[in-house]
Amino acid sequence: MDNVTIHTSKDIERYITSRDYGCIYLPPYSSELNPIEQFWSVVKNKLKREKLLEKETISSRIKEACNCVLFSDLQGLCHYSTRKLMIA
Image (cartoon, rainbow, N blue to C red; front, side):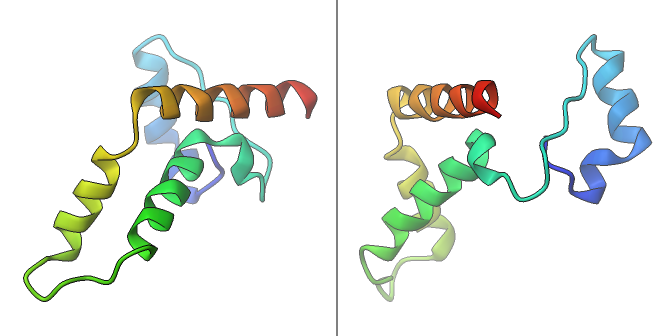
């Protein structure tokens, strides 16, 4: 997880550990190690390609952009982050 204050709270840590998971925090300013940051980067790039039409809402465009990301793309993002973590 990144080091955003809400992610480092004791309540979040207790919630995660109560489900038999552990918390691993990423170094500051290392978005390339976090697959969700890469995912949102892909979605934002898809949104930038076309102007928003009058009839569309931003939420419908975001959903559409998210649905364009394939499972294999997500696997690639996770693989990339894992490789970067191994190097770091």
